Image 1 (tube, one colour):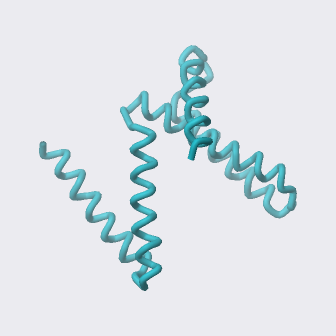
Image 2 (tube, rainbow, N blue to C red):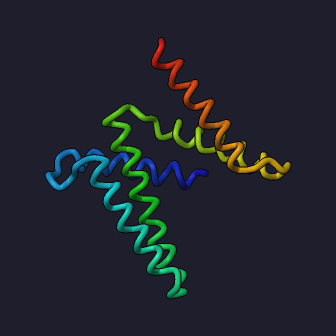
Image 3 (cartoon, rainbow, N blue to C red):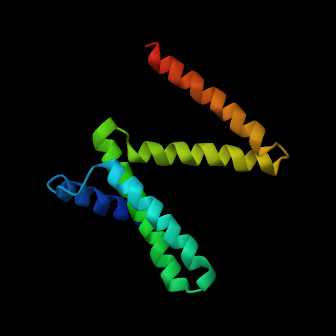
Length: 124
């Protein structure tokens, strides 16, 4: 999605600015903000004001992208790898439930595979 890439680039520009600001505490700052924005989405839903709801959902997305860019700097996480992993994970889950497999069994299988991947990385 082209729009996602554009917004991610804006967040990366913002991350450069944040490095020089005392209020920023990296990913912790944006995780806290994301929690607040999720509450605002919940508050907005029953009001049936679509433009406000879209605005609040955009704020959640914005803070999420800021978390990604901060963690990229802090721990070397690649935002594109996060997206690729999410696509694979949820494609497997949705494809599984479409053929009658339970969400829980797919999730358990994925947890085992993830633990194996981590063990392989640790043992290298």
